[in-house]
Length: 620
Image (cartoon, rainbow, N blue to C red; front, side, top):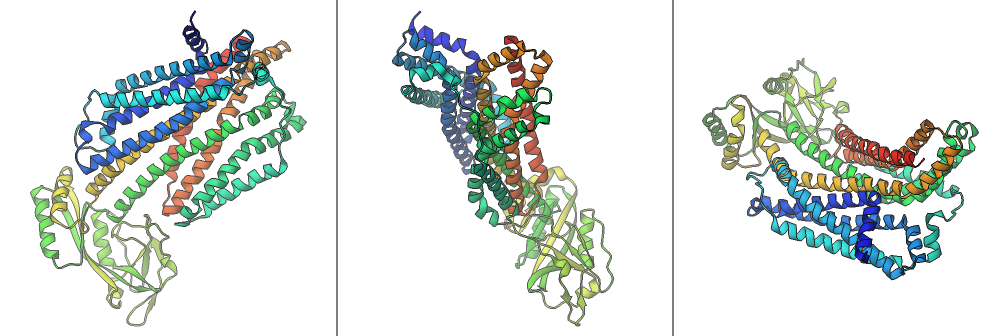
């Protein structure tokens, strides 16, 4: 057997440990390759919009590549950590440290080669499906047909072979500092019972509490100002949570005899403190990487909701036109002409929007008849007001600031009469960027001179809705963009511009999350041989198969979900802060994103637990 064959056989023998490393590397290669296919697609060359998409794809590929470097480095380091004893035995049998380094180098390059080639082949298999998905998400007018991506293949292959080469060199250099006695003892060196520092434990609680409080209490632009300090404080608090607070809680539970001696809790808690301390850095990395994934994707979906909702909240009708210029009659005639050309039947209404001095600021006020006319266009109930009665229409959309509280304001008429609102309602009948008043027609005529006014027209399609986009394109070409609004066309334009950002962010978030899951897999399986020996000994003392399975389930669940639970809490706080930034409720989006990630993690847990438990039971 040649030395190269020996290295190859080592990879085959350790396929269980290499599986997550190989599959995760293969997945990152595939995602990088997919982005390269997009970035170099012939349909994305030419206009400015597609150029932006290309730049976004290239930037995403760069982020994935940099992250892949650190991910592969960590994965390889974890793998070598579990093989210390194997290397020590090889040295006893006559293998030099130089040969061990060469063996590790060859093994890693072999895995890297297979992962790179496999990722490219897998990318080619799914390329057409992903291109179809991208075509719809990115809203690209041209068809993203399949092509053979020679440039993408070369860029991906060369980039990742270089990555694996430098990782292999670095890892073999690190091995030089290992001593034989350290390698022989491997992970069996006694560490003593882990203890928690009371000061650091309290500091963890204080830092996390302060970070959460600052993130949740900040409003508007203060959220941005608090962002960096909160990230630093919460990151330190998270690290101390896993290194100190978790150990402190476990030690307290062990001292509680009723809890510790209950059924198989003794087996669970005896080893849990060691595992939490040993895996603290891994758990910290998983929690922070997962938080980045949750927050990034939640922010992208949340911001999309903010953008689209702001358009819908300000424009409840199919078309609207605002102007304070002299071309009003000409432009309105042009709109009616285009709608007629496209055979779109509509109901329309017109008013003059006016603002008046109220409580030291300019506030919009509408008459009852004007409001009811526009309310009927969109199917809302009319309001009925007597002379002297006023209602407030509370703003529900996002204005990147706190809405006015008009319920405590008063309106003074020219007659000297002071009116106070009696109730607040919600409506989208009239366009407004803040809350406004509605009063009776009689009182409206007694208002002083307005501080601002603007002519407003609205058209609600009753037939021919399928031709709205065609009409919108004509309208936007013929009229000033800032005066005419088509809700359907505006949403189309937003998604066309925002689609690439959403698509790129989604892929990067998935890469981060998959990598976080792989970190947990490595840590769990690094201790597999030690766990086999431990549970084999305990089984001889009378532990039943049912009790063994219960202990393994609880132990695996705690180790698997502890960092993810922390990440979910971090993500929920981050997305709540995002809601406070926009003064917009993003609860549904937050729950949806976090629930999807939790569901994926649960499925991943059941798969890993099945194979882990199966191997332990087979050894026992």
